Image (cartoon, rainbow, N blue to C red; front, side):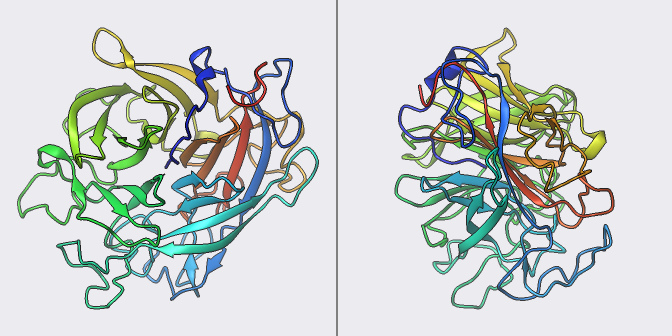
Length: 412
């Protein structure tokens, strides 16, 4: 889940895996190398409800919580895009994890404003100021949806599984989706502008509305476009499958694709990203320039069982002899220095909140390089399933900022 990078962003990453710094909210790292550190954190309570109809009627009880809920649940953020005024577009996924339990969950993109906790204090909260509803009033979808016969045709988590987000220069949204998997294009008000773009070669997931009877799915369930990055000029998108394809012997292998926005077509270019461990997943991506991407890699565990929550940098021009992208570690999200003790007062005793801060949530699904050079990380909390911080208690939605801490102050 990614925002469109702005012109001239962060050439310093070409120098070293940590060659970015910023005027941090708390203490800017100018003139000396302090190393990476946590500089800000904000949370949204797990049980936060937004206006709208009852949701979660079909959710299985977990962590002492059961539906239905008197409003629209916000089950974390699967995608975030920087707006530029201190607020962000933040998009949950399809709601409760499956087609069968998410028909009452409305797909939305929220305008979120963190009130950061930093070394100087701060509320450490997130407000959701407004939202746009994803919908299909133009009837570009040629398959049945939950609100088929309504005028607005609001989309639900039983229709599409939205996972990644790019904010285009014209204010429209490009969205990576998993049920197809599809690329979706919506206007600034959330209305779909054109038919979904499927994977080339007829590749389909088990949830695809186009899967024919008896057809063997060629993409694993919920392993579609979890990650989507855009070139700085917005002309190229890089959708990335979340995991390996069915039947793939090498379960480290994840495919990176290229989509030409002007032609509305995939190119012939493909790359292989190789995960640290077999079965690891790509949670998000962000384009630093036309060639270099940040890729967020995670395992499927949480709390003390989590092993891999890392941000790597790759260069599409650099592959090894087998055509696999070379990758360089930028930050291990399970071991972030926290010299200012951010979060200790707000979450005493929480797993991973200490002098070394860990982001051990199962679905770490957002990496954004902000215009000032800090990394923004956020989680999908899979409400009410995940309990990484406090066993038996559903995880909150968290957003954190990391200063990568080099001698270069501000943007390169």
